[in-house]
Each structure stands twice: as C-alpha cells, then as structure tokens.
Image (cartoon, one colour):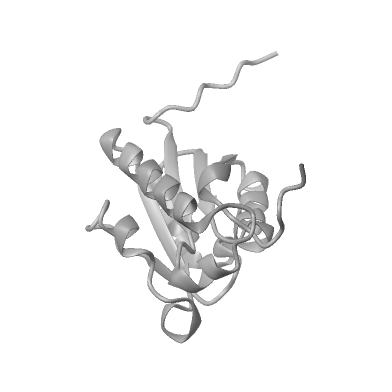
Length: 146
C-alpha cells in the first residue's frame, strides 16, 4: 500500500476555467458574489504560495465576455487561453500549459460544473493527473439539494 504525496504548493497547479460574466449568469448553486469573492481569494492564495496558474476562457468576444477583471488582476502577467470547445482538455494549448507546469496535481475551479469542470477533470484523471475540485469557487446550473 502506498501513501500519496499530500497536496502542497510545490506539487500542484491552479486552473481557472470560464470565470466570465455570461457564464456566471447560469450559476444557480451558489450566490454569484460569494462565488466571485471565493475565486479571487483562491487566486490570491495561489499567488502568495507561488502556485502555477492557468486561466482559460471560452468564446470571449462572441458570447461569454472576458474573465472577471478582479480575477485577472491577481495574475496580470498570465494570459488566458482562449478556446472554442466547452472541454478545456480538447484544446492543445490548454493541455500544453498544464504539462508545462510540471505538476501532476491539478486544483480546478470552473463554471459550469456540469460540463466545463467535469469533462477536463475526467480527461485529466485519465491522463494520469490527480484532480482536486474547489466547490466554493465553482458553480453550475443545478441547485444543491438539502
């Protein structure tokens, strides 16, 4: 039996998927302002601990709008990866960015959990990565049941 290495700033990467205005409107399972505050706080924590970060967005100009300015302000030197597919893992530039971090533990925050979080998480697992989902910085269409 082996014990996996604990998640820490030296072995993980932060991934923010589709934190864009139009995508926020579809979120029903968490208050949108709370979601934004939590997401920015996660990005700031990552910056303090020098965790590599990846931002990716979908259809910025035609539908979703730009990533929240408050989020981008945390890492002004990180250029978001623009995609046309809902599944980030189908984008070669995104996968290359993940590989370039050299990290095998991915901490993912995304809008919409039903698609934009689930699909890349499953494909990353299949590719040999460990995936950690931050539920307080992710949102979807479906409401949580009590």
